[in-house]
Image 1 (spheres, rainbow, N blue to C red):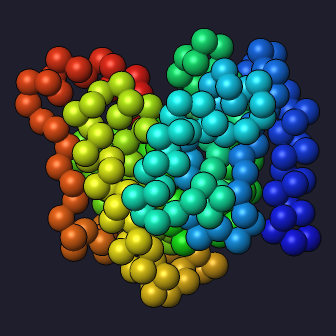
Image 2: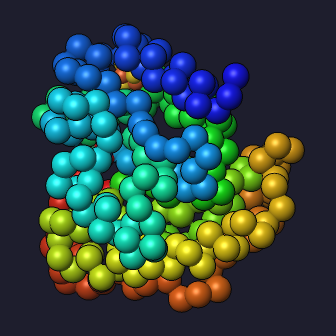
Length: 234
Ligand code: URA
Ligand code: SF4
């Protein structure tokens, strides 16, 4: 099977999937979209109302901002692969539940394996949590890490920056550094085929790529008072 055929196959399975309760409320599932040979894969949280109605990821307000962010890196929407950790809309956009994330995870794993992107960008805390459990977005955003043979960058969720103007400069700066990080990822030897062991010792030995100063997240009072809203969106 070609990569595209594999992705089409996954999409056709997702379209009729009943593996978790989210299938009950969906109009359309949202498998993800983009070129099969994308070097960058963006992983968000889950479809919202617009995405649910049209079956495409990030086409509402957050999606519009995402296009602007990609522009910071000289990229178009059609250059990257975009999907979510859950493929069906949680009711009223509530957080996905652990059992829903678990039920949908294999689709995402298969998409990652098929596309084999140079860089994975996580948008939001559920997507970040898949690769960096326990990480704090204010500490790790914009930094490229090698996790189980893949380069991963956690970014603020575009919707978070839409709701909190103070986050906007940080997310814009993080996306602006993407071309430079992509160069690093392109030059790095392929390690996914022979996956490093995912144990603690191996993780500790894996270099991170933080040579360029990451953008500073806003800190202090405003962060404290905004915490609940931030937590929801990360
Ligand atoms: N927010 C997400 O996390 N995903 C989408 O597809 C749209 C908005
Ligand atoms: Fe299936 Fe994922 Fe949709 Fe749940 S969210 S029904 S696991 S495709």
